[in-house]
Amino acid sequence: MNDISLQLPDPRQYPESSPSNMLIHYTQAVVNAGGEDERAACRASLRTALAGMLEREELLSLSVALAMVTSQQIYRELWNALRDAAERPDSGRHAVIFAVPLVLVIGSKGKATLPERIADVDTLNALFRLHGLFADGAEVFLSGKLLHPDSVIGIHSAQIYRYTRQLVDAARGLPLELPAAPIVAKDEGVFLRYLVGVAIREEGPSRR
Image (cartoon, rainbow, N blue to C red; front, side, top):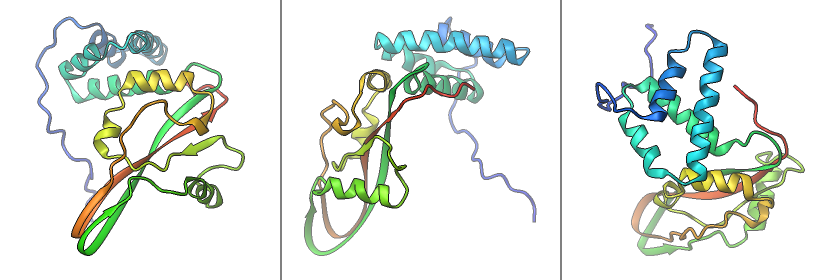
């Protein structure tokens, strides 16, 4: 049997050249680095630039850079660097923001409405601990509010950057008003919702 790659081709069209853009310049330097030491230094410069932009909530500049990259390789490098800067402080106690997908399959002879949240959220968290999804003694809390995918997408990188560094108590959850999304079904359907959680970590990130 032939070895067939499961990776689909990238359908996006990239510009042949990009205007002078600081983030693309830094990212291109990472890709073109001649050795690991040079690559690490270039990534550190890129991370510093991204952290400053996230601190100032320069979301438009971040979107422009991602839109103007000239290849999938540069896009992937810039995207991973953005995630690293937003989600992983250099050291110390910090929050990890995560979302658990929930697929609901519904069948009903008439119109049915499911609640917008899981009523007993404490039991939900206890079940996650019982089955080893949360480690023993871990400071982690999963909200019972059912979120539409659009609401999760709406949490932007600057918010993740801020919450990662400012949250000190997992049980309080995200200080963000995310609208819950009840499900209205007739006959049958499949629906996707998310449960957002917060975990607190004491140590800094592992540096790549």
